[in-house]
Image (cartoon, rainbow, N blue to C red; front, side, top):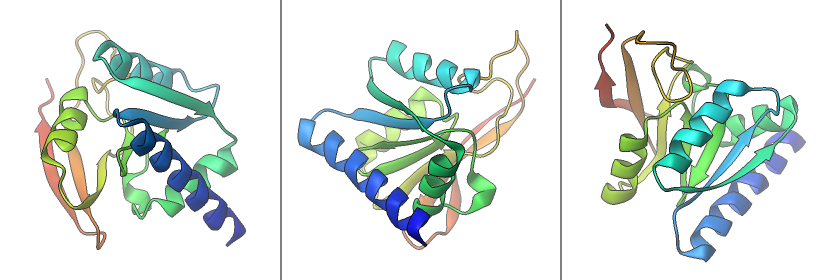
Length: 150
């Protein structure tokens, strides 16, 4: 329970920092050793986002995921927050921008797992089919976007 409360405080602080600045700053929680998370961060930066990246322990990251309201089938390697939304995993730039433009009343979006070809998971021309999932405030999920494989 303590872990969940602490992670909830971290997510609220992350959200508050982004809102206070008025710009869509993406707050990222990741483990220092994760290279693919760094690839996702680089993709977001190249798209013009400002990021505040925090390397945290596995326990802190797990607690933040629990506090997000996302079910564990949506979890990936990093968790981010922007403008009051949770962004879980290797979500493409276009879907983050779409979320911020549409501003739906949801918890956020996720790319479950670590699909090859998603931002940060690029390996040559290989691409797995994957979905970006929208998570409603009641936890229900729906496909927000689909990306084909090759």
